[in-house]
Length: 371
Image 1 (spheres, rainbow, N blue to C red):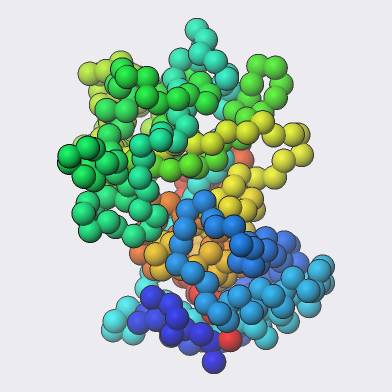
Image 2: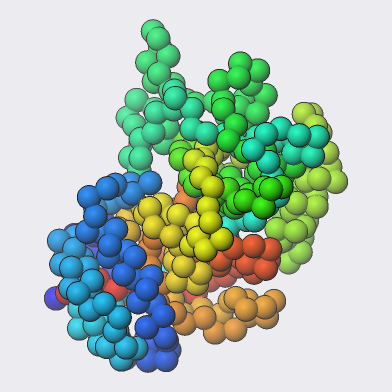
């Protein structure tokens, strides 16, 4: 029997079969295997993930140990491994009705920038400050509603500075590790949680998540829709960036004020990478794989958990089509909350960003739990 009892999500799992998963027999599981093995290596490693999540079950650890011994299985061998070692479960509500999963997409921006401030690159990307106290995936009882804070002498634990306060800070306590053109570029990097900065000498700087200020995430795209500045069917990453820039980025102007409505702020590590570097590093501390890595709620799903996704998504162009693939929980995000909330990684660059920005769709999701 699958090891459902160890999951916080056990109250909304209903056993099903691989035969009932539309498209499972056609998926390229040899391709999926590479992403899965990356998770297995992480599960068995001793170093902690960048963003701690609930621990893998003993059964998942045992399956990971089996998987790394197979080296490079064929597609049929990979399919046999999954069907022999996992059991699929549908996500249901308390009334035993299927939950409609909700999918979005994200990507790794590739943005021009500099290691120093110039006339062209004026907006800093900050390293993690020394006074940031992270609570990981557990809310601190002394600071309910926040996932990070700072300690002030005589006041104990208090909320960390907001996005607006950090950007307007004049104390020089925040240390830039790179500079980009404007606050819109910086904001996109924050939302995506990683980036590749193209430097003017041909080198590339990889930005990896290093912490956040702990304030709840707020969708500024939703704000524009709710205030009827952009129609829902016209909302995209391009239209969002255009509206912000056209409405001004100086303090007090509408574009900047909109950015400040999301008080959440992200800090990064930076490292020069070579031309053959892999995708961005996700919350599980492994490189993400396009259309195989998925961000989930880390308070519910352990990293490495496989999910079968069945949805109609515009994943190859602007027209929705069948998306039936095996993906693996390898990342998380402050906006990814709930057992059926998923964020699909689309890859790097402008095209990946255009596709990811068009994903806001319902669909079916099945979790594969180790036997």
